[in-house]
Amino acid sequence: MIEAVAERSAMQSPTSEAVPSVRLEHVSKSFGSRCVLDDVTLDVPAGCGFVILGRSGTGKSVLLRHVIGLVRPDSGSVFVQGQEVSSLTGKDLARVRKSVGFLFQNAALFDSISVGENVAFPLRRHSRLADSEIRSRARQKLAAVGLEREYDKMPAALSGGMRKRAGLARALALDPPILLVDEPSAGLDPITSDEIDALLLGLKQQGGTTVIVVTHNITSARRLGDELVMLHEGRILAKGTAADLDQSDNELVRAFMASSHSG
Amino acid sequence: MLERVGRIVVTLLASAGAVSIFAFKALRELVVPPFEIRETIRQLFELGLRSAPLIAVSGMAVGVVLSMHTRASLERFGAEAMIPAGLAIALVRETGPLTAGLLLSGRIGAGIGAELGAMRVTEQIDALEASAVDSFRYLVVTRVAACIIALPILTTIMNFAGMLGGFLAETATTGMPLSLYFNRAFSIVDLTDYVPATVKTMVFGFIIATMSSYLGFTTESGTEGVGRASTRAVVFSSMLIIVANVVLVRLIFFIFPKAAGG
Image (cartoon, rainbow over all chains, first blue to last red; front, side, top):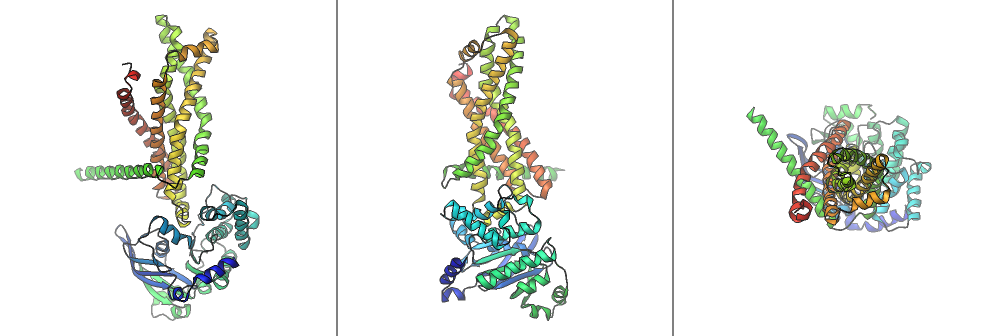
């Protein structure tokens, strides 16, 4: 972990510091006649906790999927560490994806292999490490999320919160400099939700990881977000710190920030 | 009314086009490296080896029934001595490959359709892509390769199990010894009977794997969609196998006139 952070710091030259981790330029996306993203432009600085807020169906998850090329924009461009993603395919796209971890809303663990092998999977695919080393690293990642004893269990045997933590361990297997998190609190009790937030906060503060979080949970958003954006009907309605959004001129933004909905 | 018919025709053509592109992509990536050898071997075990008991038991039952029918027919002409050879020809040329193809479209087709469908709706396929893994190559091409390899092997198992079943039926009726039964059975079967008919099942394997993978890969609408993908995988694979069989038999007769009795 420490090595990875040191390696990453070495990679971040003065030039690269100026380049945002993720940049969306005039991105629009429609599914059929339904416009999900409408001319969205935003920058996510390196090492930032960036929170995307909004009501259900406003395009938050679709925006997140654009970052790793799971969804392609109809128009506009998506940049990850200065590299245009939306036109990449094959090995070039894979190279970008290796630098981005993705925690899915329902963790999306591979249910045919054990929890430990889920975490080991990216290492088996993208490193030349010996089997023992891969297992050892997977155990370390699981230990970091408090699941060291669950290595040999199947995903179906885990609770929702444990699955999410295992998904986080898998997303971090390659020590990516950018982490995308889709609804970390969804379906979790407040205590487990706080634990996940603490893990994400630790990554950002100690590891320098850029963490982009989609959430409905305002408490979580305030905790994790150095910057927040609120999406509404595919457009950015408000952008800034939590304090900025609290004092927004827009009634919907203020109402959203004042809500106590927890996921 | 006319508009509705037109819409249905356009939808059908679009689906046929999408399946064809999917199948062509699978065929191309089968021969272009990198190869997912480890996963292909795993699939060969899951789809092939695990199907062997079903094929062996079914083959034996088919052999017993065929033997009883053949005896009932040939007895009228006093040609009971031809029973082993008749059964062997029927099994090797057509009954074995087609029955194996249809049975496996049920077992393997439903399995692939449901597994990939479930992976789609639970975002596991997206998770593979997010892990910088080519999900098509990892999930589809490996299954296609495994099915192409497994089908001829399983068909051979079915042929032998069928002949064994035929022997059991015959020995129970006449007390015919094993060596005599197999001598008579193999006296008439040669490689032009076995090879083309068995190689034909590689096409069946390709059909089952691509059709089922396509339906699983494109699943929508949650668990209901998974069930639909699984059912359709069996229905469409079976239908395509039966239709393809007609074309392939014609092709075999054209390439190997001896197989047609020419």
